[in-house]
Image (cartoon, rainbow, N blue to C red):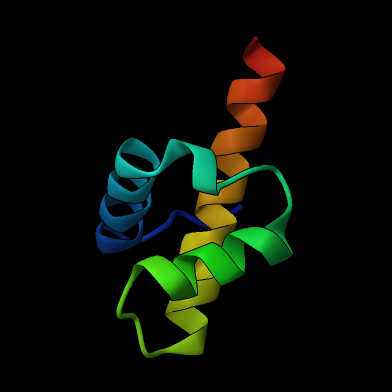
Length: 64
């Protein structure tokens, strides 16, 4: 498991804080949400953010 860069975590946490209902545990829907809610142009960065958000949502579901 690789350590995510700081900017990926910052953007992901900000999105989860502002739009918690826009994300779930499905990567594909999170990818579309990241595209709609940000101005990230790079597909790789978008996918990393979506993956980070997906993992965070899965962890919160598991903890509950």
